[in-house]
Length: 429
Image (cartoon, rainbow, N blue to C red; front, side, top):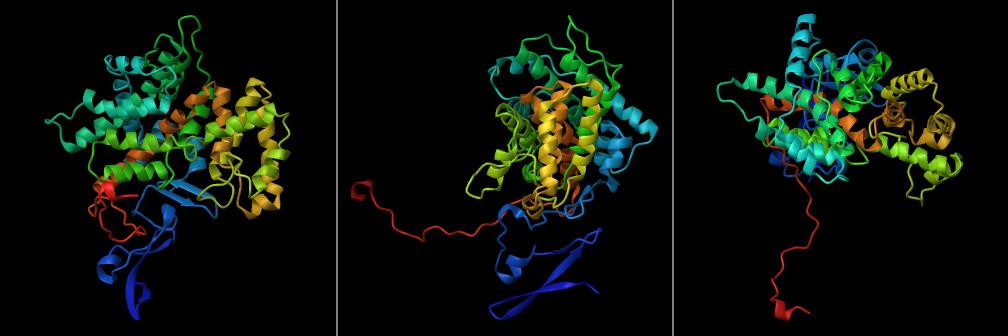
């Protein structure tokens, strides 16, 4: 028997259908509420509103669970590569060895960027933020790689998806090289996805870059942990813009712009800046903790708390282990990591942090890891964008394939002035 929820308005009772997800999540279907009842719901920030049915990612914030296509993210981080995880997110299932080999070859074949695009990169101001550049360049890809009528829609999507995954990595490294005034390093056919990115970022004619397997593994883990996270701000942006049936490049460009914000993808950069500020002030975190607990102080401890997780972010546990392993191998004693560990101890023991669910999230350690790898601060959010790309693509693809697809158009409750007369300018006073 189908479950329903009852709503009483003006003395009349209306029944609304209930939907239950595969993990027991329950929702009230209000898609016909306005049409049948004449009212809409109000939910600022959409914290209680499901915008879609999805088979991609499951998040349980109360229990600290994150799974891609049913597989816990910590297992993927331990056993998989970013390329394999990306394939699974986009194609629903883990690839066979033959499918993975074919996908890797396609990524290699599409890794070069059109040489004319270098003019775009070189004409951005040197102080331009890499996220703004990346968003613009991704949008421009459509002009350089238009659709070919002879291809089927499926072929076109597969090539566009592969092109994006491969070229975004190349464009990110290229922007960094041009920003520094260095010679651009091109992708190599004998390197893996992560190895190629590191080579393009750090290889130079005077100092060849030596591939370190532990660094490569750490980068794979970083990207896997960021690959998707349900209907977050940037993913919602991709779905909303994509619902207008724009090309994939434009939808992904919108996601990059949303990710740029300090409350979203820019948080890992903000964490390192905050830790640096504490270090510059003597390394004592106590005054900053006191400020964070003061309701009248707008200061926030970056990297603590999450819109979804009410317990320890499962990605943070994995990231912390990787971060410790890389720093131990490099024998680097990073004062910022010491401060981070002290902050973590406080967060896990202080009643204020526990009561307000302010546990360390993935951004808390990811910035320190990127710093240890050698990624410059202004490239942190770009690294997030590369990792989130397969999630955006899979979400765009799922929404495009949805037979119930609709142009997304939220409602509002107008609270402005009622109709009034227009006053000619000479009579206004």
